Image (cartoon, rainbow, N blue to C red; front, top):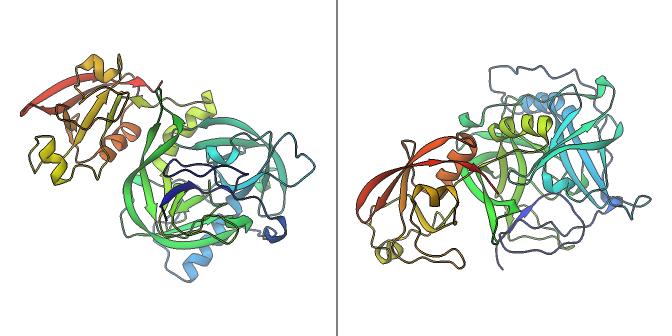
Length: 390
């Protein structure tokens, strides 16, 4: 059975495709959806305690403080206003103005969006902005202030592999579910929700990998550290396991959008409705492709690491900067002759995922960067001005 990587909201009928982050083909099953628990908790402070909470009492306290800020999101289409929702996901409150963060794929195509709070209060939401590149969306609800419990944001740059994390959301419609795991890896790359010119998709980078159990319906919910701070937004799972109804289920490999991308993207979505990502205009071999046989074929040193450029988009930033690709962009080309990017602005690069992470977390549109490349055995520095993704 092929491994597939899937978004984890529960959506209507859609096709599944290998590693392309398709909509998950799992219809809502209303009879199995548990009612949202009624919790009455004090408002979450803007700054959490410095000490790390220890289980089990610490996790109970964390849940009671954070869960009031986690919401269930239902989507409706034009043809089912009097029927069950088309899909369901999760989200969380970020401020007292009623802004809620979720995944873009959770609300994609929705005509109406319902937000249910743990208290039982329900409200219609409007879309403030969406970003298919990071798979983030911001909603807004007009509700009484006592329903709003903003969850504080942490710092994903401080996240380390092996630290304990908590996911709270609505897997399979089971509102207010909490699971615990660890950070399995950082800096992962998946395809974004937006197609690139000429086919394929742009890359979404710097994702957090976790083994905390996340399943369909968890999409858009928070991944938290043990201080109760959001460090990521649960987005997708890679799975070989399926329920009897065909729904993908957790296999211990989940992915979350890091909160520092949320910090960059969400304010722009609230202000402008969109966010522009820096763009190079290249394609590259994946992180696992530079094996020894491939290095020999490309006439590179067995110690070579970096980003091997397979093609350069015509008139893109890399093309204007003089970056050389191995061939044309119309078809995959892994022949010799492309540049090997080994650093950007002095930051050494071991893999393509590190380049994407730098672009989405450190760089800005219009910024000039220096790409250091190996070409024909020589090290060359090339200045490049970043443009927005087309």
